[in-house]
Length: 265
Image (cartoon, rainbow, N blue to C red; front, top):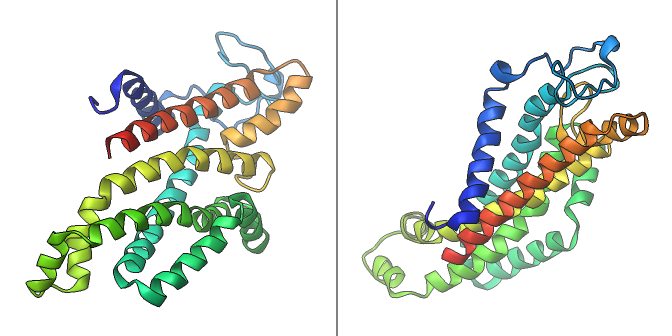
C-alpha cells in the first residue's frame, strides 16, 4: 500500500469494497435482482428501496450489487487474456528478433490501428450478443497495447549480461525467458494491465449500453445506464445516475492505481 500513496490506497480500498460487495451480493442484496414488482415500478428512494426501483419494480440497489459481477468480470477476463497473449508475443519477438520480430510487430500494428469497439462488434456479429463475444473481441484489440510495452522492456532485458550468462551455462531459450525474463518483466506487465483495465470497463459497459453485451434481465451497470435513461424521463433518475457514478468511480480508481504502479516500475 505504501507504493500507492494516499490516493492510491483510497482507490484500492474502494475497489476492494466493490469486490467484497459483489462476492457477498447474495447475502447483502435486499431483493432478488430479477424479481419484478410492478406495484413498486419507478418508486423513488425509500426505506424499502434506498435507490428506488426501475420500470419493472426491481430494486436498483440489489441490481447494482449483482450487476458488478458482469461489469467487472468481463473486463478482467479481457485483460487476463490480452496480457497472457500479448506477453507471449512480446517475449517471442524480443528473443527471436529478425523476421519473427518484424512479422509480430506488423501484426500488432494492424491490430493497434483498429478500435477495440470495432473488434467487439465484429465478434458479436459472428457469435451473437453476450459477454463471450465481447470478451473475445476486446481481448484481441487489447493485446497490442500490452505487447508493445512489454516488447520494448523485453528487448532491454534481452541485452543485459545475466541473459548471456544463462545462455553460456547451457540453459534453453524457453527456460531463460520463463525463469529470468518474465519475472523481471512482471512489474511492467502488471502496471500496463491495471492501466488497461479501466478502459476495458468503459468498453464493456459501452457495448452493454448498446444492447450487445449483457442481455436482459441480467443486471449490468452499462445496461442499467441505458434502461435508466427511460426511467429518468419518467421521473426516476437514480438507476442511471447510480450505475454511471459507480462506473466512473471504478474507472478512476483503476486509473489511479495503474498510474501509481507505473511510476514505481
